[in-house]
Image (tube, rainbow, N blue to C red):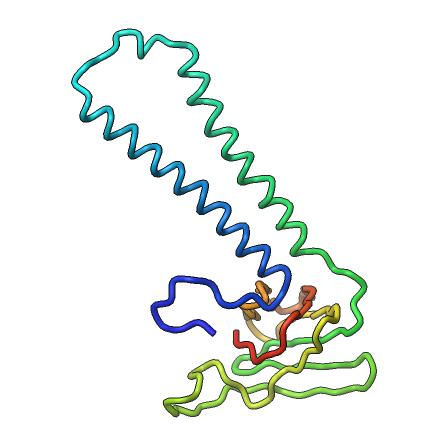
Amino acid sequence: MMTWSSMNFQNANSPIMEQLIFFHDYTMIILILITVSILYLMLTMMLNKFTNKNLLNKQNIEIIWTMTPSMLLIFIAMPSIHLLYLTDEINKPLITIKTIGHQWYWSYEYSDFKNIEFDSYMNKSINKNSFRLLDVDNNTIIPLNTQIRMIVSSNDVIHSWTIPSLGKKIDAIPGRLNQISLLIKRPGLMFG
């Protein structure tokens, strides 16, 4: 669970979120290397009193500072595209959950084995030990290590259904069915 002024991600509860965290760390390493190298070049240019008249006319230098950003963009784009397609992949779901967003609550329906429908409202408790505006009266129960398909729509306006620890966010739009795939690896109470 995230806390106030925390600068890191929530604990990953799905393989997709683990991959997102790895991609973030990989990209941050590249960005730190770029920042350090640019700061080093700026400091050496500012502190160096000598000038080289051949510095501006070198063909090799222009090739290097044109190809280096291109290669860095490719090194960032390839894992990003792979991760983008991985997040949209849906593998033979065992359970389908229908989720409908309303103005102040969500409706859930499990209809694969037994027809179960319930509404989930936010708790209005203001206890010091409760999660304000995150806790609900009826939690959605999702099994572990099971492929789940969630079909999301809205009844009135555009809503956003999300669980950050799973790395999932989907918009509930009136008149449109959106779907996501969920796979949970750890038990627990997740908020979103």
